Image 1 (spheres, rainbow, N blue to C red):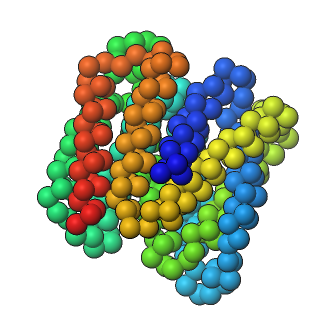
Image 2 (image 1 turned 90 degrees about the vertical axis):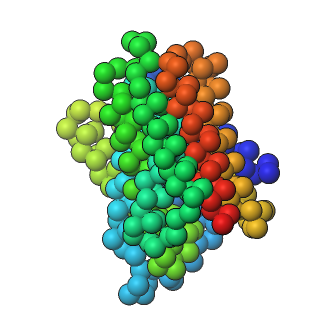
Length: 286
């Protein structure tokens, strides 16, 4: 269980760092770039078997898609945290499982049941509640709901791409290493172009912040995998614990540490999100 707690903590810490970045004068794009350098290097600790990527069945379209979607969703999440706060952004991120679940029904032939459908319905209501403006100028701008929906859709896209990689038989460690490395190369090319053009010079502060961000981001993934390995017969418990834990801890950190304001609709959406995740996890148990 301690692996699950560490994974939840790392996930929320990522949002905290993204919240703090503008206050510290950090360029998010540079930080995200160095984040993938750190994540790529740390992925080598998992000793990935790259031989599986040499055959003709390697899922290169999905891997390239991940290389673009992963840094893209990082930038979107950073903007959502700044515009809408940690509380609502973490809920939107975790409720992306609704779109992932819908894709599983339509694209991957997963069987629906009453629990999953009930969770899907409540989750959609939760999205409405969480996306509602709080009325506080400092915590929700007129466009914040658009960034929340972008987080929702973006994380679902990543889930779908990861599902395609898994169905190909490619080991997850190899897929992560390749996706992280490709994301780093693409982002580095963009940062060099910004540096040469004078739009944004590369800075040591951004480099250090990005390495810290990458270590915590990788820790989130590593501890989540370890939690599944430690409790191999309780995947639904891990799934629900991770998602509900991030929603609840994110809410506590956002409200207590950053003074984020939430409306009655936001709090209702938060509660519905927890119930929806629990129902979907119950449905996953069959």
